[in-house]
Length: 160
Image 1: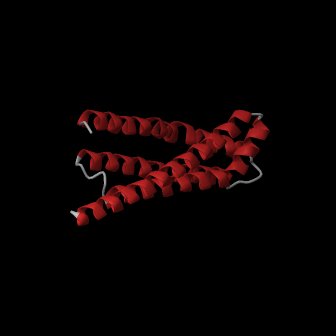
Image 2 (image 1 turned 120 degrees about the vertical axis):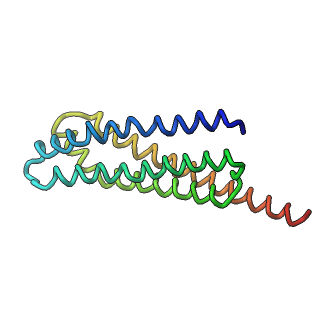
Image 3 (image 1 turned 90 degrees about the horizontal axis):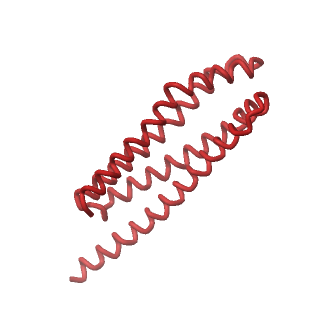
């Protein structure tokens, strides 16, 4: 693969991380405060939502880092290696983690959306869950295909 295409993909991975960083800096504190105001019956809800939202950013950035590493392996002609399989496995687990964390957070998001009459908030939560699940399935399929390709390659190397 040409180095230019992986360079473009590395840049894309970096640029994907920037809006999420902006959301973490600007949106999460506002959303946590807004949730604390709306659900004032639960005094601990604001710090819980604040910490929980940042907790969901951790697996996202771990998955981006693994995608960057995977592109580096492709640059080094190590695409068919156990390192690539491991990177895909980590991406899969990160995507599953994000889905599970947002499924657990959905009752809070639903409550805030109901009180504030903002059905778009529920849709955003559902999109995050669905997109993470799709990424997890895609990474699992790629992991299995890559593992089978490595097995076939090693069998061919032993035959010759």
